[in-house]
Image (cartoon, rainbow, N blue to C red; front, side, top):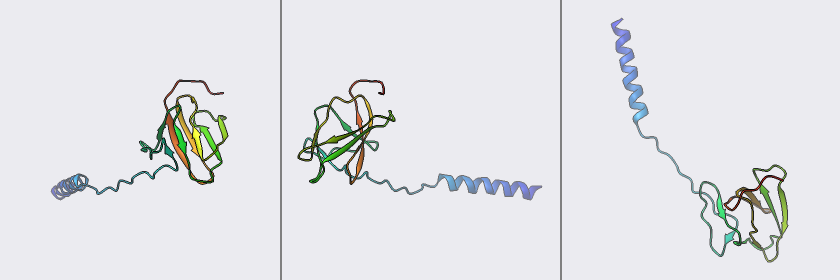
Length: 118
């Protein structure tokens, strides 16, 4: 019985020391978005880029079509033809959107006004 108590005490102490040791973690930096906003590379905060009405979003050369997907609404997907690889952000309802080109996409967050799904 005494041997069982000693083994239990050793297991508890050993387990406590194992959980208290720091575990090295690797923090990965989010990749830059595939566009610039008003001539600057926007920060990616919590996986999303913040856009406002009137922002000028510029893509690389050759981008002619943009897919804008309002994630809260399953049927609110728009294909936008852009000129000179630039898109002027319209007045979008508040929420998260997927902004995608043929090559790559980016999660964006818009804070404007609320609107129901179509």
